[in-house]
Length: 186
Image 1 (cartoon, rainbow, N blue to C red):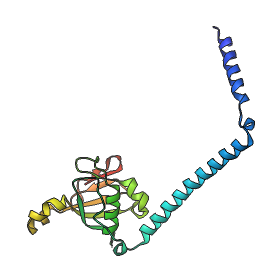
Image 2 (image 1 turned 90 degrees about the vertical axis):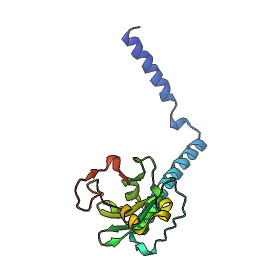
Image 3 (image 1 turned 135 degrees about the horizontal axis):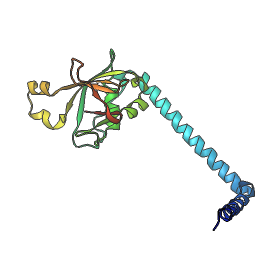
Image 4 (image 1 turned 180 degrees about the vertical axis):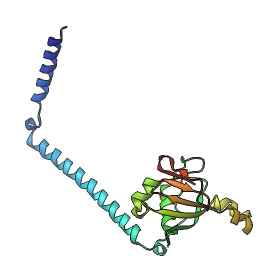
């Protein structure tokens, strides 16, 4: 088969496809498709609006007014107990507990963690921030058998620099760990 014959056949196929256009559809079908497209756009933008409103509320509500319910179901067997979290001089412990509980991912490293994009999408004030977090791993299981001194030794500290995408686990701010894939491992 020569090239000119092949192009001729392709041209005929394209010409046949052009016969079937939207203008040939019945009016009811056009109205139905237009309505579906309109409602899809409306649902998309309504969802975006609700997300922005919830982010605005979370950003501007003082931390002491956020009620954190630790009995919300967690996906993981191990638990993370945030003792204190600060965003600059402001305490955001309850906000961070709520966000971490709702966005916890067991697949991040050995223990689990959260994704920075998930946190920032719900709490935009974190996008260029430094967050200081004090936490204990496996709080519920071990706390019963530990003395106060042992509990004090098991408290971990972390400074999360979201703008630089790094984590500092030492109070001297040395040895920054880069956040791989934007995930914060605890």
